[in-house]
Length: 127
Image (cartoon, rainbow, N blue to C red; front, side):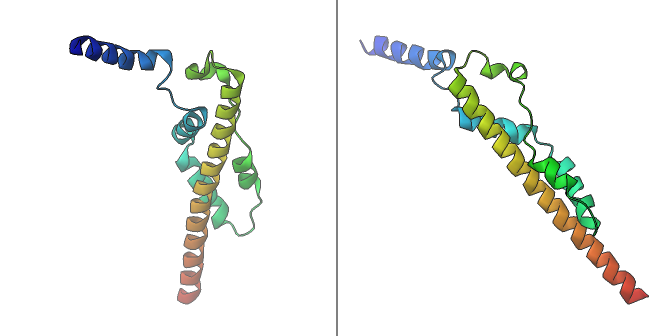
C-alpha cells in the first residue's frame, strides 16, 4: 500500500507542471519577463546623456514613461490563457517595464549630472 501511495504522489507531482498547476501567477510572470526584457544599459546611458546636458528636453523621460507594446504572438506561455490572465500579465509587464526604465534612467541622470558638475568645477578651479 505504501508503494502505491508513493507512486501516486510522485505521478501527481510530475503531472502538475504539465497541467499548469505549478505555473507562475500572471503578475509574477509579467514581472519576471519585464526584468529580462528591459535593456538597463540603454536607459542608463540615455539618462547619463540627458543628465550631462543642463538644457536638455524631456524626450527621454517621455520615452521611458511610455509603456512598451506587448505582442501576444511573441509570448508562447500566454497562448491558450483566459483573457483575465492575459490582461493581468500585460498590466504587470508594462508597469514593471516603466518602473525599471525610470529607475535606470534616474541612475544615469545622477551619474551624468554629477560627472558634468565635477568636470565644470575642475575646469573653473584650473582656470
